[in-house]
Image: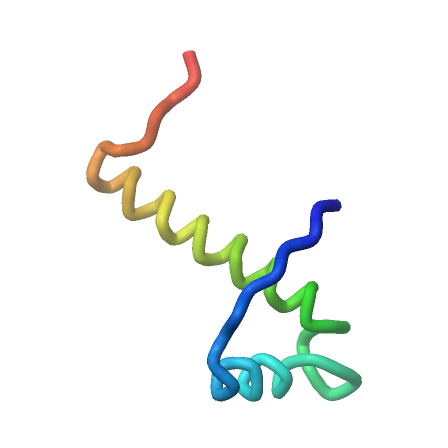
Length: 58
């Protein structure tokens, strides 16, 4: 799996960390970020679909 590096504001990192760990929804930051990216891409696909902007494979 490729690794990437991103810069994010401390406030977002603190919020993210609140969802990570034994009491959180995610095991680690990477899992949380992957889930967030997937969710965001799904939402963008839904918006594109509503506006007939999705390319379909034929």
